[in-house]
Amino acid sequence: MPILEFQNVSFGFGVGSDKYPVLTNASLSVEENEFVAIIGFSGAGKSTVMSLLAGLQTPDQGRVVMHDKPIGPPGPDRGIVFQNYSLLPWLTVHGNIELAVKQVFPKMSEVEREEHIQHYIDLVSLSGAEWKKPNELSGGMRQRLSLARTLSMKPEVLLLDEPLSALDAITRSVLQDEITRLWEQDKRTVVMITNDVDEAVLMADRIVPLTPGPGATFGKSFDVHLERPRDRATLNFNPEFKHIRNEVTKYMLAINAESKELKVVTDLKLPDVQPISLDKAHNVQVNIV
Image (tube, rainbow, N blue to C red):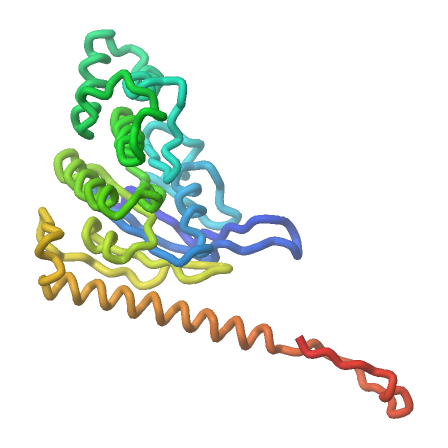
């Protein structure tokens, strides 16, 4: 049985005729301990998918479920790592993690709590930076701290909302390997949002594209059967890696082109007009939009 499901989910912003449809009849199943990457173009609704999984939004139609029960408000069973770190600037590395641990494990003894916090600091290679505040850390270190804070709550599902997109290429590569290592070491279900096909193939078990919006839905699913651990230094020479990357890229380009063609056809449809008598025709100005 899947741990997470979108069941014919529709969601939009606004009301009535002004409502903008973000998702339409979107369905997806995620198995326990599976690493799923959801990819899509800008504006496809990737962040909305993450908000629905986190419980920050509720569907207009359909259901988002976990263990076959509707997902409720945000909770420690679903840990989320955002693109913008979301750290408390007045707290240290230790303090940011401690705050989360105290909320989720209020009965943990002080000794256990300190060991627990240090374990996750060490896990993301922030040892020695325990008492630094976020403004004293690099972008990569801040994102590792955000990841450590989320992992310290021991969530059943880890939600990654484009956590690496704002980083430089080298730091991004390091954190891709770091997240993959942590997932292989401490298996849990991961749903990652990304717009990078190579990143998705490198890290995930399965890649699920979102069709272009408005009214996006989940497209064809691509399984990634590359052996783990995956060595980025040799992947470019791996025929299976190149095959999956090319297939996903071709599919994304095809659905994007199809969406643009549909938009052009829709935009060219002229409104219905009433017959005009010839004696008034010379006073009529026709505008084609």
